[in-house]
Every structure is written in structure tokens, then in C-alpha cells.
Image 1 (spheres, rainbow, N blue to C red):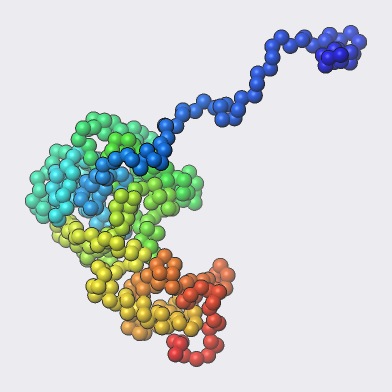
Image 2 (tube, rainbow, N blue to C red; image 1 turned 60 degrees about the vertical axis):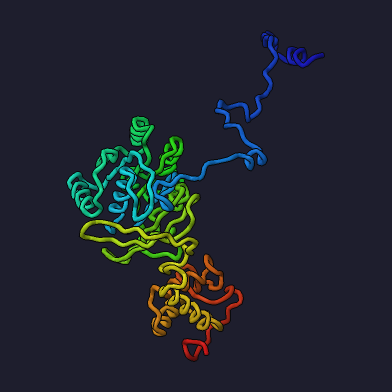
Length: 389
């Protein structure tokens, strides 16, 4: 007796049996075939990829501004917009930037924190300082929709209209172009990544470069990249990152550069406040981005940092101390606060690994510094001189 016959016998008197199925149930669909998704592009074997030939990365400003998306971060009102305008003008007109050749083409500059009057004033000053003609290939916009509100769409329209000659898109600033974070506690990593990721995808599709301007945090960090405002999603999505380090307005500055197609290095800069003209020096290749403020190896600043490093090793060779006390002892020994910071950075986790930091006393405790791993630290002497003999 089959299952259907058994089910018929179990029916209550007078009940009609269920109709016999006329079709065979469909086989279960594998999960990876259930959805309707576009297939990814075909892959490549490692052997084929190694044998393939690629053109070297293009630079819009030789050795500095590479193809892809670059983030420029710096303190508010310390010359980021002047530098962006100078570079955009140089690319649009094909002018060299202090000896660095440029790849000429159309440039779109979204100056979203400026007015047309202010931009005109800057253009006039820079024209007088550089002697460059004002190119028609530089387009300036003081208003633009946010990325998700049509900004990317209209950006693609501009690129299509200048497809044969477009080179660079400058967004000043990211905060005025990106979509607003959803939460009240600030943007998440995913939101920051998406904030520039969509534009990067568009630029990569057309083979263009982008320069996105943003701010740095108030507090200094051992690694300049940690000073970029927001989460690591911004720098993670970008191809290159520049951090403009200015002591104060009008003084000499440094531009820390790092990227996927750009060697890590430091570029010395000088800003003329009367003309708004940045002078861009030669890149110091291989400079340790975790060592703040050091000039070219062997220079005066480098010598001061090396002397402070030797002092730190001697100071901490027996015991660990609270970070504040180390800084105070360093100043008493004649080392400048910035030199102490640079020396600690070079000896820290991200440098040579000689110096270690550990919070003592829980979350609200204080940071202690010692040489070697914290597990090997000795207890600080209850009495005696603050500097070990």
C-alpha cells in the first residue's frame, strides 16, 4: 500500500481525499544559483598576470600627484585650498610646479567652502606670483549637490563632456560633498569608506585623478595618517594620502605623502602669505612617516632627534616612568617637546620597536613608557633620583 492509499484510509468518514499530485516537485535550487546576480569578470591565472605588461602609473604632477584618489589633510585655514588651487591651475595649464612637470588637461575644482569673490582674489594673487596665464581648462564651482543627491551623477556628466581631455577633479572639502552620516555619533568606518569610494570608482573607470581635501584632528599623532579627521575608512579607500604639517600660518611646512603608487616621503614646503604661493621642494624618499618633524637624514633636525633617542635609551634603561615625567625630564635635559615626540615615535611600536607604552591603573590610568616589552619592566623605585644612574 502506497503513502497516498494510507492517507486515504485515515480520512474521516465522508471526507474527500486530496487530489493526486500531477507534477513532480521541483528540485531544490542551490543557494549560489537562487539569486539573480551579475557574474564577476573573468579571473586571471598568476602565471598569465606575471607575464602581462602594464604601463607605469601616470603622474599629473611628477613624483607627487599620481592617478587615482588622493586625500589632502591639514589644519583649517592653513593653506590647503591655496595648495589645491595651485596644483589644479598647474595641471590645467600644463605648468611646472617648482621643476615638477605636469600632465596637462581639464580640471574641475569644487571649491565648496568658498565664494566666487574669494576665488577671484586668489586667482589674481597667484597669477601675479607665478606669471601663469589663466586657463579656460580650469572650471571652478562653489556649489554642488552632495554625492548621493546627484553629485556623482553630475560629476560623471562633466567627465563625459570632457572625456578626451579631463585629468583632475578637486573636491574642497569632503565634508561638503559626502552624504551626511546616518548616526548622531559621527561616521562609521563603512560610511567614511563609502564617502570617497563611490567617487574613486568613477575616477578609476575614466582613468582620472582626484584630490579630496579634508581636515586633521587637533591632537598630534605619532603617525601622520592617524591625524586625518574621521575613521581609517577615508585613508583606506584612497590611493594616496597627504598630510600637511604646518607649525603656524606663514611658516615653513612639510607634506607627508604615502600611497599605493607613490613612494613614502616628505616634501618640504614654504608658503608666502602675501601672494598665497606655495613653493614645493624635492621629495625626501624613504622618510619614516612615523618620525614627525625630522628633516632629511643627517640634517640638523635629524641630529637633534638622534641625540634625544640616545638620551631616552639611557633614561629608560632600568625603569619605566609615566609619560608626563619622561617629557618633563626631557625638557629639563634641554630637548624641545617636538624633538622628544619625534624621538619617542622613532623608538616606538611603529618605528624600531625599542620603546613600549602601557596604561597603568585601568582605563583612567596614565601611560607609562619603558624600553623593551612591558612584561620585562621593573617596578619604579619608591625613592631616589627621577633619572636612573
